[in-house]
Length: 99
Image (cartoon, rainbow, N blue to C red):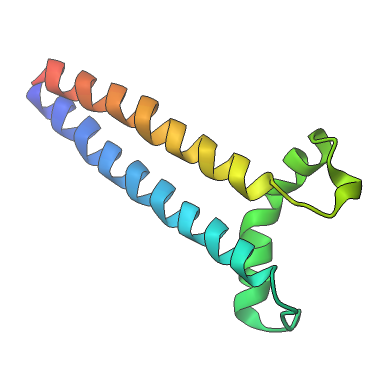
Protein backbone atom coordinates (compact mmCIF):
# COMPACT_ATOMS: atom_id res chain seq x y z
CA UNK A 1 0.00 0.00 0.00
CA UNK A 2 3.03 2.28 0.11
CA UNK A 3 2.52 3.03 -3.60
CA UNK A 4 -0.96 4.36 -2.90
CA UNK A 5 0.44 6.41 -0.02
CA UNK A 6 3.10 7.90 -2.27
CA UNK A 7 0.51 8.62 -4.96
CA UNK A 8 -1.74 10.42 -2.48
CA UNK A 9 1.23 12.39 -1.13
CA UNK A 10 2.16 13.53 -4.67
CA UNK A 11 -1.45 14.46 -5.35
CA UNK A 12 -1.54 16.44 -2.10
CA UNK A 13 1.52 18.44 -3.13
CA UNK A 14 -0.03 19.29 -6.49
CA UNK A 15 -3.36 20.31 -4.92
CA UNK A 16 -1.60 22.40 -2.30
CA UNK A 17 0.49 24.16 -4.96
CA UNK A 18 -2.60 24.81 -7.10
CA UNK A 19 -4.50 26.26 -4.13
CA UNK A 20 -1.58 28.51 -3.20
CA UNK A 21 -1.22 29.70 -6.78
CA UNK A 22 -4.96 30.43 -7.02
CA UNK A 23 -4.81 32.34 -3.75
CA UNK A 24 -2.10 34.59 -5.20
CA UNK A 25 -4.20 35.08 -8.34
CA UNK A 26 -7.08 36.22 -6.10
CA UNK A 27 -4.73 38.62 -4.28
CA UNK A 28 -3.49 40.04 -7.59
CA UNK A 29 -7.08 40.50 -8.75
CA UNK A 30 -7.96 42.33 -5.54
CA UNK A 31 -4.93 44.60 -5.84
CA UNK A 32 -5.71 45.40 -9.47
CA UNK A 33 -9.27 46.33 -8.53
CA UNK A 34 -7.94 49.24 -6.45
CA UNK A 35 -6.69 51.02 -9.57
CA UNK A 36 -8.32 51.61 -12.91
CA UNK A 37 -6.80 48.79 -14.99
CA UNK A 38 -6.90 48.64 -18.76
CA UNK A 39 -9.61 46.04 -19.48
CA UNK A 40 -7.84 45.03 -22.71
CA UNK A 41 -4.57 44.17 -20.97
CA UNK A 42 -4.00 40.40 -21.30
CA UNK A 43 -2.94 40.06 -17.66
CA UNK A 44 -6.06 41.84 -16.42
CA UNK A 45 -8.24 39.75 -18.70
CA UNK A 46 -6.60 36.55 -17.43
CA UNK A 47 -7.11 37.58 -13.80
CA UNK A 48 -10.77 38.36 -14.42
CA UNK A 49 -11.40 35.12 -16.34
CA UNK A 50 -9.60 33.03 -13.72
CA UNK A 51 -11.36 34.51 -10.70
CA UNK A 52 -14.81 35.52 -11.88
CA UNK A 53 -16.33 31.98 -11.94
CA UNK A 54 -15.53 31.62 -8.23
CA UNK A 55 -16.17 35.15 -7.00
CA UNK A 56 -19.40 35.93 -8.90
CA UNK A 57 -21.58 33.35 -7.06
CA UNK A 58 -20.23 34.66 -3.75
CA UNK A 59 -21.07 38.24 -4.75
CA UNK A 60 -24.63 37.22 -5.61
CA UNK A 61 -24.95 35.44 -2.28
CA UNK A 62 -23.67 38.36 -0.18
CA UNK A 63 -26.03 41.18 0.77
CA UNK A 64 -23.28 43.86 0.48
CA UNK A 65 -23.70 44.61 -3.22
CA UNK A 66 -24.83 48.21 -2.84
CA UNK A 67 -22.16 49.30 -0.37
CA UNK A 68 -19.30 49.36 -2.85
CA UNK A 69 -17.20 46.94 -0.80
CA UNK A 70 -16.31 43.62 -2.38
CA UNK A 71 -15.38 41.09 0.29
CA UNK A 72 -15.64 38.08 -2.02
CA UNK A 73 -11.82 37.82 -2.33
CA UNK A 74 -11.56 37.57 1.45
CA UNK A 75 -14.14 34.78 1.51
CA UNK A 76 -12.40 32.88 -1.31
CA UNK A 77 -9.02 33.22 0.42
CA UNK A 78 -10.55 32.00 3.68
CA UNK A 79 -12.02 29.00 1.84
CA UNK A 80 -8.62 28.23 0.31
CA UNK A 81 -6.95 28.42 3.72
CA UNK A 82 -9.63 26.11 5.12
CA UNK A 83 -9.05 23.61 2.31
CA UNK A 84 -5.31 23.74 2.88
CA UNK A 85 -5.73 23.23 6.61
CA UNK A 86 -8.42 20.54 6.53
CA UNK A 87 -8.37 18.71 3.21
CA UNK A 88 -4.64 18.74 2.61
CA UNK A 89 -3.82 17.71 6.17
CA UNK A 90 -6.41 14.92 6.05
CA UNK A 91 -4.93 13.58 2.83
CA UNK A 92 -1.41 13.75 4.30
CA UNK A 93 -2.59 11.76 7.30
CA UNK A 94 -4.23 9.21 4.98
CA UNK A 95 -1.02 8.88 2.96
CA UNK A 96 1.01 8.34 6.11
CA UNK A 97 -1.47 5.71 7.28
CA UNK A 98 -1.16 3.84 3.98
CA UNK A 99 2.66 3.75 4.07
